[in-house]
Image (cartoon, rainbow, N blue to C red):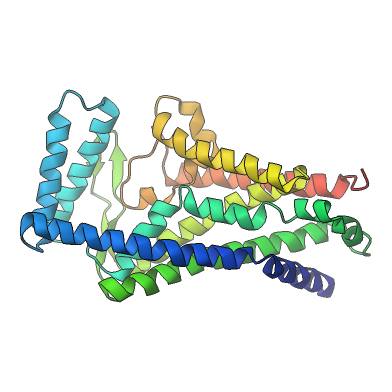
Length: 330
């Protein structure tokens, strides 16, 4: 156990010396204020358009706009299905007198994380973990590392623990920075605001029978838990590529292409049912909490969690098997 602790400590020191985590923090510090300003402008324009800060007027106008698009012959059938779901959910919030977009730091954090889980967070996780093994080949330190009287699986386990730690730290840092920065503009309240979860979809019909209201702080914890799980799957996949591909650039390129293709597929593969077994199509788990329409029919939270778990387990098996048998001299 002491040898594993020393290995993990060594890996953490190497990760810090690469300064990539600091770069990620700088990116967040640059992007979050931009999105905060954009959200503030949206609220101001909405108030200017309707001449009131009443969220109900804004919500009714959005419903009217959606119904107008729904009645248009130019709107594709897939979009009509999404519009029907959005209209029903919006009307439900109106009936319950709950503003789903109340401008506060907690709501902003919730929305930012939800929108970032599909591509942004996986990309920054990839930056952390995609070269944790392949960089050792590039610098030649892999040979020195394997000359230690420590089993190979323990060496890779220390790298895995390091990846898990920095991935968790990245997700937590994203949420904390979102809350602190957006709170300067929107205020730091909103923790007890009710959020409706448990909305079930059946085609274009919405089932509200299992809906229950939870405090926004609890909903944010659930959302961050799902985002963390998706980030872990990306981290494990990146670790596997780092083991399989000795070139850091090649490993990052492959993972980048996979993640971007996943974003494209999520918007285009509604008729390709087999695609629902791809891990990148299942990364956005947060949409299931509030009744979001899945990219492919038949997908739900349980299904996506199962698919991601299988991919994560398979990537870990491949990583430890290949790393334990790999010839590092050639």
